[in-house]
Image (cartoon, rainbow, N blue to C red; front, top):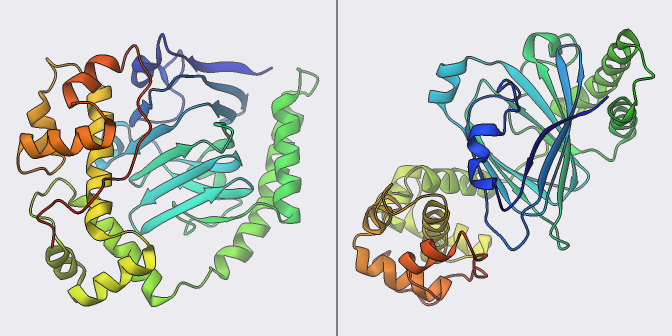
Length: 337
């Protein structure tokens, strides 16, 4: 039988960090978990335990965020692998060597022993759904090579993936008719089928152009140094070992100007920070400085232009009102060169 791991709505979603690991606080692993506020908050995860593994179906009507850092890894020393089947929406995974975006029909792997962050995005109908399997790393090594790392992604529309997903879904939906031993044999069968497909795709990874590789390096550098107010085209280019001219070319290909990307990331981070904190926790000015603004006045001006209200108004209205639609920062009002 399946069991409910967690259910979050507008009444309890702010407490998700303390309860996303289930009633026994032992599912998944440590990390920073948050839910974006919205007019409809409906997040639910159901679990089916099979031996030492867990099969989980997660559904949401709003964006979810998760980050696992080295401090979390050192604290809980948990070594599990998660096999993700994306059913609806997108799963954006940032890790040590890059970034990937898995769409509906894709398969992704994450590992708890390496840092990563995840953003679960809804589709056009504001729905997100993933079906994933959590397996101890030592148990998975019998099937899948250890060198398949966090961020491995491939289409799950291949025959092997469809068969494995079908087996795992049947186990998840079983109403108690399967004996535990039979369920474990079926899980092992699904993993064996997945193993063949993963080994084949891991041996023939998708080729990236030099520009793609450089762009991933640049975006990762920006994410790491986003709080630095001195972040500029010159500092990013120097940090990534490329020329400012080539960096400008990469952003032209990317389709978003450098300064627009920076302000977009900083304002989104500030909005999430304000939505999940109280005035006594951290002041608006400290939020401004922590996301890389040089002055609180400049931050307030840019924030109001984007969200149509001041940071203080935004923070006070968030518990009772859904956030305004986000718009990319207008113009190029900044010192970023």
